[in-house]
Length: 115
Ligand SMILES: [Zn+2]
Image 1: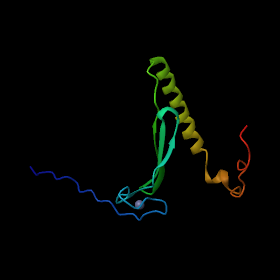
Image 2: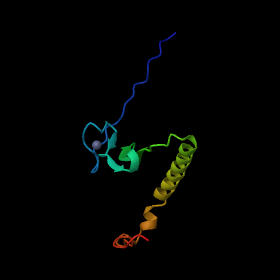
Image 3: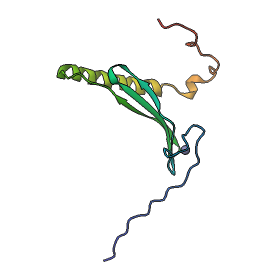
Image 4: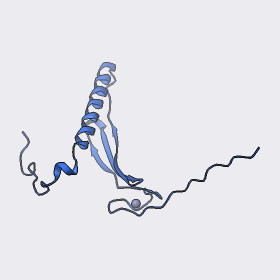
């Protein structure tokens, strides 16, 4: 019986991007931006990192949300967080180049007050 050897993993090196950190955060074929941080109330924090892996760009989002010690409240908070994560995914997915075509110079929200 022949001994089976582990397959050798080879990854093709990809060049740094215009936006990646160009330091230890990048790998051979994965490139990562500096972290974008949004602090929220009572210790909440969201950290977004732009990542390119295998020619696909995506946003890696880590969110820390402090929860109540009261179980019912904590469950409601988790439900709200899940609901808003779904809305976030849908809102980001709705932004497509075709939707923006011809409107690149129009930024209707800039200069307007929130209702
Ligand atoms: Zn890089």
